[in-house]
Length: 322
Image (cartoon, rainbow, N blue to C red; front, side, top):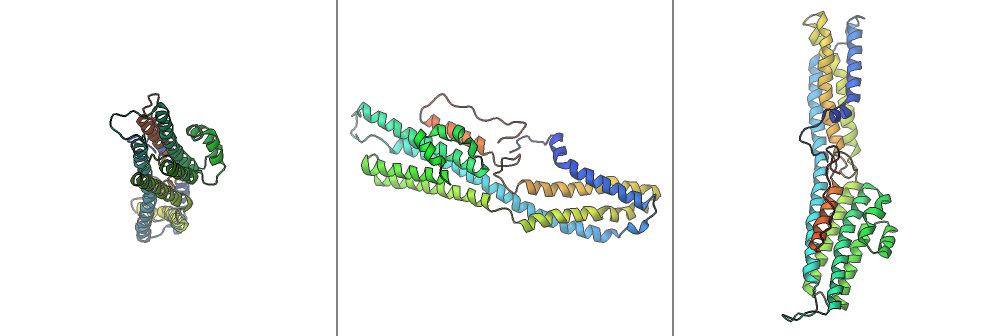
């Protein structure tokens, strides 16, 4: 996600240079054929070109709204993942307590050690789930060993890595641990168990929402026709402008170049903005910053466990937060 208030010129140039080059060369060719070569039949009335421009602007505006909705839904889903991850950690730490309930009675040392281990397992597996979901959405399985496995037991990490959908199986393992805590260890009552299972249900819903966006591409008919209409308009624009400028004098036909390039570039950039927002989980410049969000989850949850040696929050790289 680009975090700088204003786009740097090199970023603008990166997305613009191909279109600017094409529009400039095409407009120069039209002026050369119309002026020095005297092929005046190239000129067309301006009114139909202007009408087409209005229609194209409505169409790409509609397409861009749909693209932004996909990005914003993805960001909301990951906002929900942050919130419910914190809720899960609080539940794990405050619900899973000693079986000794009498005031002033200390639990045996072994019980404290067991509770600490179970707290850590439940919380760390949640951190692993968030990172595993991120790697699934970005299709980066090669990062499993460094970004997911450290939060799991080695045996569990190897087993989960072999699954087709590791995130779903991590949630299933969380549910299995809750069953053990309630039925075998007596560390959860029914109310607490239901609440924590509700959190797991929310994680499933959030994961499903992310998978829906990832596995359902933006409708190609909208994306393709938007791209095609912009280029048709850009092709007709200098043909309509050149007749208007020639009315000002024969030397004014060259004004067609800067004005047609400028208008075409505006339409081109609007279409590109929509295109860059279609798929928010591709690890691109304008995507949801899932790596930074996962780091935030890790810091918050490990701090709730009482840990002090925490990783720093991720900083933007070249104004981009990944």
